[in-house]
Structures are given as structure tokens and as C-alpha cells.
Image (cartoon, rainbow, N blue to C red):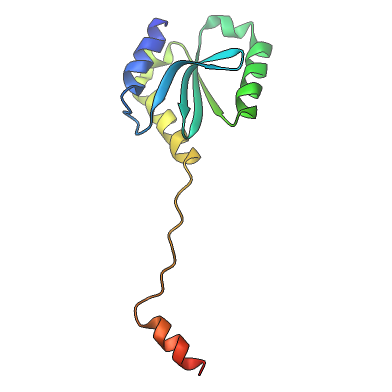
Length: 120
């Protein structure tokens, strides 16, 4: 693990954002830097070598998305420059990916009796 991955891991581990992340998680022929299995989010830190391998990264992201994952990418120095901002961006995406539970529509007290009496 790189220094930037360690720095980000310190901010993700132990369900600090309310979900469990795995580091160096294998998926198919790839290894995701960080993966949250529910909701399905992959976080990647890109070093300078990613400038020359954009085609590879695009295929990799396509594979992850085909597996149902959303992918967030950050520059490898971002955890050192703005760890809180990176964590906030991840937290925001997790919120977007988490379906809100529907609120059940319970009849209001007394309303069901009024309605049933009106049809008689």
C-alpha cells in the first residue's frame, strides 16, 4: 500500500463513514484500492502513472461499473492535501448511492373509520 493509500485508509477504516470499506479488494482481474460492498462504491487513488494509462483505467472502471459499482477517483496526493474533503466527497457519494427507505403510509387514526362509514 502506498503512503497516500495508508493515509486514506486511516480515514475510512473501522466504518468511520458508516459503512465498511475493504482495501486492496480483488474484483475479476483487477484490485480496487478501496471497495465498499454496500452500497457498491470503489475509491481509487491515482498516481502520476495514471496519466499514461487512461485507456486501462477506462476499461477497469467499465468493468467495475458492469459489476454494479460506482467509481470515485482522486489524485494520490489528495489525502495529504485535503483528507477531510476527500472523505466528504466519499460520504456524499455514499449518501447518493444509498436508497432512502420508503416511509410506509399508515392510515391516520380515526380516518379509516370515517372512510369506511362514508361508503355504507
